[in-house]
Length: 116
Image (cartoon, rainbow, N blue to C red; front, side, top):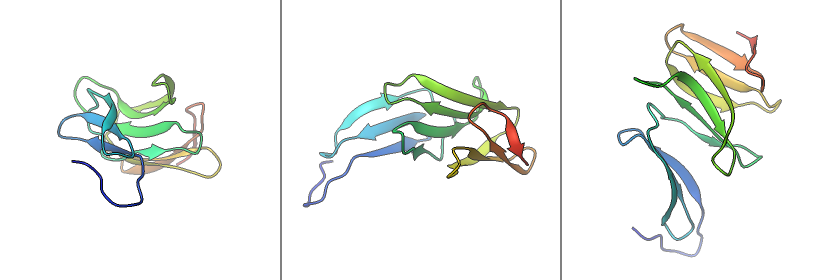
């Protein structure tokens, strides 16, 4: 599908059924794909250009990952409980919703829980 109209934007989206994250350019073409992503229903492009996404599922750790623009891993957070969402906070920390423990935690860039 090609994008039509005068305003065009890049976007990043997830396809949970296919286990993919897709980068789509201004013309509607897929320019990059990250595969084997389990349970990603939420993602954020951070002001730094990094990508933040939560994940859970079989054969992967539950938690979130922050990717650099080149695809390398900047940092991760691991938990034993399903993550239903994440949100970057203005102070650089990440708000994490853990389903199994029914809790929200604030995690700093080093992976430490600073608030529960």
